[in-house]
Image (cartoon, rainbow, N blue to C red; front, side, top):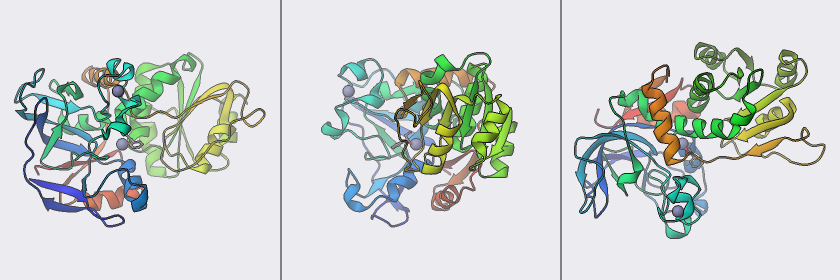
Length: 346
Ligand code: FEH
Ligand code: ZN
Ligand code: ZN
């Protein structure tokens, strides 16, 4: 099969030929229909070799949908031909967190050498993906695979974040979304679908601010040092009840704290390497902060059900496997509108 691999630390990913994987006991072989690109892939490829927690080469891609192609011995719960979404936050499957579906927070995975596909295990930017267990597959039930594939990461991560913030997303509340990329433009739509909150979007790109308003943000402001005052002007001086920072730099962390209201819930979901100082008089009274990771198996089932109910307008740019290195360059340059999606089968 053909696959996009990150082969040497610091080198650009390249398309290579690999043997077709064979499913072992309990495993599922998925023919990949579509795989999304993520800033986490870029972050991974920018790490120095000594900080990688797995050997190279690595087939990239942790956001995937496809069709079940073959079952390993004893595998039940799916059938050849099923159209499926891949849950990528693979855990041990046996601990309390995994038993509750919160495999994204499995405390044993790293010690057991369990990695997510594309983040240590062979990933989905390939014609075939080996999935370690049928519980990590969710039926797509007729959803368009290209429009649906961002649900498995961008959508799942945003949905999981919103669910934590839900107690603060009440009538009359204000939610700020910093960064209108793959996650941000989906988060705006999920906030519209799930909450009564007013939505203010921030980004450094006028094109992405236009996208934010097109998908449901009430206001869209340029993201800079004046943003907190702009948000306070829009909220009678009170600030935002919830802030989703999908960028995660020092600058957006500062905007987050400076625009947060008393008792705000703030979330750092970005990989920009920024940090947020927490302490008395450093942040608004009663502010709580959360650094979520991906989402639960239940969250993925729910966000797919939400998509099936209609109303999500997930924007994608599609690329062939050979165009994937170019797509990563566009993602790095902030030029991708919505989510970049690769079609390994062409
Ligand atoms: C992957 C690796 C590390 C942090 C965050 C992520 C997300 O892209 C997974 O959704
Ligand atoms: Zn990701
Ligand atoms: Zn576990």
